[in-house]
Length: 247
Image 1 (cartoon, rainbow, N blue to C red):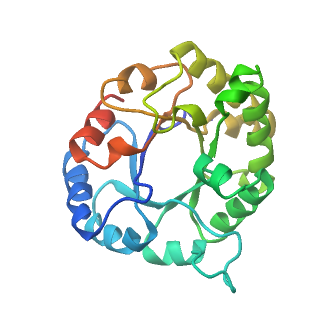
Image 2 (tube, rainbow, N blue to C red; image 1 turned 90 degrees about the horizontal axis):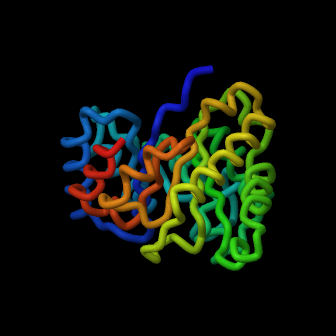
């Protein structure tokens, strides 16, 4: 099995309007020589328009969440079919802001992964511990448990990625030390290999949590780090391109 292809994915979260598409266009114009794959995941109302703006470029359009069901009486929710129809190619699932704010369980995340697979979307499944869990020495057990509970067996031979985002580092400006990142990514890699065999060695494991141009090179060159899930720094093309260039 080949080595993981790096992925740099921008998560715009609940930010961006039509005028923001100029930033995505600038990313596409500057990311032609990227050493890995590049994706931008805008809010759902922008997915279709971003797909049009980025058509023909090497930047992948993604989404930030998908419902576990394909359709139904779920006011305000968006299905994987809708996202694929709008032009999305991948989808972030199980982000800590969903797990914490909407009480999403591992089992629900796994159901969302199955929905994504049904409609040809590549899942980027997020895992990560809280500060209290890390301080209690539970970080490795919590995260590997999330990996096992959130990744269904149907992912075998399907493209997917895992993103490690320590909850305490998201949007805080704090980042784990390089040894802490490497320790967790080794544990995730071992779990993936146990679950999926040789395929588990080729799954990119992204790091997320206050990734910015000033720390991107150190993080991206740490052992078993196969890219980054970038929040706030992905909203500005110059910052996001600097992170992409650090691969």
